Image 1 (cartoon, rainbow, N blue to C red):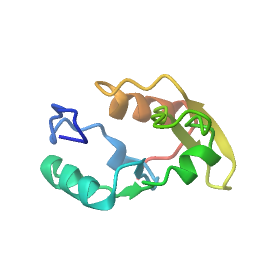
Image 2 (spheres, rainbow, N blue to C red):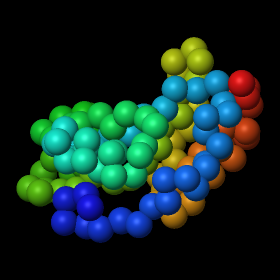
Image 3 (cartoon, rainbow, N blue to C red):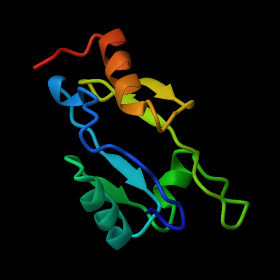
Length: 113
């Protein structure tokens, strides 16, 4: 459960991200306690950064600061080894996102471990 939404995610689905030379994390506008509970329930092996004030989400243009209670858009930012933005995925599917990321990493030429 995240906020008032129930999610069904298989912790052992194996996206393959651990096979790449990357650092990855997620960011959420939920508070740290909610994110910790969510991460533990799914046995996630990566951190969830908390942005409950939506300041970072607003800075990245993911939430409309003019609309009170606006929820952030789901996006994935791919930043290369030089710190340059390589790609922004604005069409995130929660069902296939792990494998979608792995495919994009191959496209971007990210080396495997």
